[in-house]
Length: 433
Image 1 (cartoon, rainbow, N blue to C red):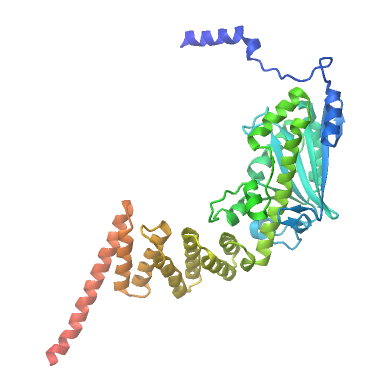
Image 2 (tube, rainbow, N blue to C red; image 1 turned 30 degrees about the vertical axis):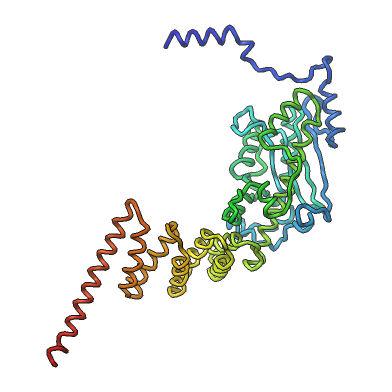
């Protein structure tokens, strides 16, 4: 092992030059200078330069007019209402005052996903409504030294925000940027800024779709907004394009990445508006059963049990897919039992069992088991309880078989005891005859 260590150290010592990565950046006198790259990038990408020579970033603004369509609706129709039920999705933000005064949508593009000091957000985008339009402002690093002016400008934008909206930003975008601010020994402007992550809300509303569509932002664009990207830059290609831009100084290479980021921000605003509208209008306004099921979960968490029951019932009546319908009925049954409306809960369980197909799903087995429990302990109909327990036994395998057998054994003893009591009650009548 010691000989191996010596050999490895010798290889590193002898090949230190080959193991050192030196980016092939434009060199003065050998083509484009850094100032040439900055000037050309500003012209091609349509931006202005922020910072001093050698440590500059590019600021690019795009304005989406109110009557411009994004999917099936106009940009103006996605403006968030101050009365939108933000607290339904994020209870901690329910008491946030004037959160809609300047809602900022936030997204970043990085040189990698592994983190660490060498990974940076080379493109940062923010979007917000102003006047009658939606403005997207992006900051692009033109070189490693451009991170400091980018962070300074982003901090000023965050200072003006009343609410930050991201898509998976709670676990990635915001912690990533906080690391970069800390790296430069700057204060973190997002510390006291209310933050709403749209991804958990999207999963609640659309992850149960019957076509099993994913909850990525581009998938939601197609399924929820009716917007389809053409010629978009794939996510895995974005860091490669940025490094190629640094090597060549050609801004057209990075133009598609900026457009990708802009579309992410507009779509984030649109998907957020769609979710808030669903919550405001209620389950009857939903187009799909999965949305009604998701709203039911949100209402139940808030404590609005009547509205939750309405949402679950509508989802069960609309769903064509077996599993989605069963999930809606199960939630409806559990909620009705919680509300002590036991007969209505039994109706929901019974509907699941009546529509079940062999082999039973986990929900259908739970429904049959719930009926067995209800008939044994509440309705005191031991024959029906035994019948449903036998259904469960026929659809159960593994370690749970012993539990079902125990229930069947107990029911058999109770039925035998009832039979004996019946015989004893009949005996005096026979004797009197």
